[in-house]
Image: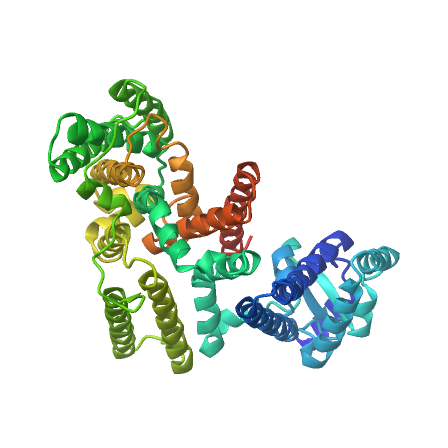
Length: 565
């Protein structure tokens, strides 16, 4: 299509976007910017009024980062508008801004003026949107354009209705689609969004709690208190990737924890024998549920819902509605113990040494991966971005290790978690079984046609989930030094939430072990931060529910955007 044809088509069409969709798009664009500014101002205000110098400097740094994010967001919006006709809000609503004269994107100069005028129209929270909407209604009979559209010589089209005059000449693309350094940075930010969300939540609650959240003792307690949920999240994310769900893990954890009390306390077994028997019982429970799911083909939701009731009842039977305790010291160490310390002053050298080894291993692994990608001729990140990520990761590990070293050192629970993360990340990323799990979740019928034994994989998934639920039950029992009938209440919801917040897809086929761990830590930080602030359990439940809803909504939105719907 020539420029003349574009001009004729653009000037005579009546398929301009309706006012309500333009209003919604503008609200999204302005809302993100306003949130960044409000966050920056709130962070600075909270630090300024805290009376603590460390908190003030931390809040000032957060405010500066938020302002930088606002500037980067504005620049990105203008560039996108100039070159593709899209902003974040426009793309979300399926709208595109094009020139009235050419039917093409409006260019940098007009994009700057249009974006500036749009921002001014939204700067007054009430009058701006009302004036914008009223202007659109007045012009609905013509091109349905607001006053900032007229200044920039532009018109907004609803491209989801099939009219997009610029598509042949300037196809729909984002900066990420174009490749190059910006592409890598944007892709990385999107891929690591859950990690950035965790960092943001930690910073927010650090400011709100005036630094209490990151006290060494609290950092250590955060790991110990959430260890059993993170263990469950590792198994749950694999179940969800395969397209299933497990509602019974809380009851299974309670049942196996009760059995560990029977084995170790009532029957007097050695603690390690009792734990091995408990894990075997967990495997048997998983096999029981896996049989009904894989071979009888009853949906996992129904089977595990029944399991939730069955094993909760068996817990009460085993305990006779009473508690079992206390446990031997070696057993309790699984939930409350620490690796022996070698203190210099008030800092544990073993913890710092382990952190140093972890940092070196991470750097070596990342360098080897980059070298391998380069050798195969694949795209790699810009060196500055690559080394900046390495530096930030090393600093994060160092700060976390220093906090642990300043208290009691490395919790035994963290050792257990670390081993599980390494093992299950390797299984999901490199093992044949892991590839089969992803293939089944992506398209079960195609996986069957390709020769994957889907029934066996499903069965083994639930056996694995039973073992991890038993391990979580042991850790929880060891932490409380008590096996009680109320154990495991709500564990399944916490584990499922961790998996979904960590990026697992509702339809299956997507998710990572590390993502589930990050999702569990987000829940743990929110719980811990709200408890420090004295927020009641009722509000805590509501807020966690909202976080889960937003995480799943974001996942659904991303899939629709990728599919072009």
